[in-house]
Image (cartoon, rainbow over all chains, first blue to last red; front, side, top):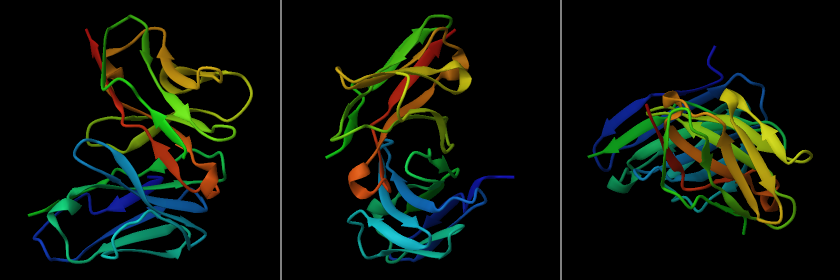
Length: 112
Length: 115
C-alpha cells in the first residue's frame, strides 16, 4: 500500500495547455504539501495545507491552483503552462510539528 | 530566516570507508533538523531527525547524525559506506516561524561510493 501516491508520473504537454496532478495519502496526516524540484535538484515548497486549509503559498504564480477536497487529497492544477514550469512536482504529507515528510514518487512535467 | 547549507555538491568515498555529508543551519530558536535521501527518479525518503535530546541521532540504513549547537552543524555520518548508499542527500529544517508548516531543504549533496 503506497503511503503517498501521485498521478500521473509523467506529463508531456505544449505551452499554453492546462494540466492537473493528483495526490492522495493514506497515512492519516493532517498536513500536505506541493514541492517543485528543478533540473538542478533544488527543492522549493509551493503550497502547504493543514486539514484542507491553505497555510503556505510560497509566492507561486496564480496559474497554479491547489485544491484539497479532504485532508487525504491535495491536487494541483496548472493553467497556461510555460516552459519554466518544466520540473518534477512532489506531493508530501506530515503529521505534527516534529513529524517527518513522506513524499510521493513525483510527477515529471515537461512543457514543450 | 531559517536556512540550511550543504557546502559540498559532491562527496566521493570508497566502499567500506566512513562517510560524512555536511550540513550547517541558521535558525532562530531551537532547530528541528532532518536528513532525507533521494535515489534516481524517486521521491525523497526520510533518514533521521533531531528534535531534542541526545545529540547523536541514529536513523535508517546505518546512518547517524550529530547535532552540534556551538558549530550549528548537523552532519550525516556512516561508519562504513556501501555502493548502494550512492544517492542525493538533503538536509532540511522545519521553519517554526511559519507554524512548522514549511520545511526548507538544502541544495543537496551527491554521494558517490566507489567499489
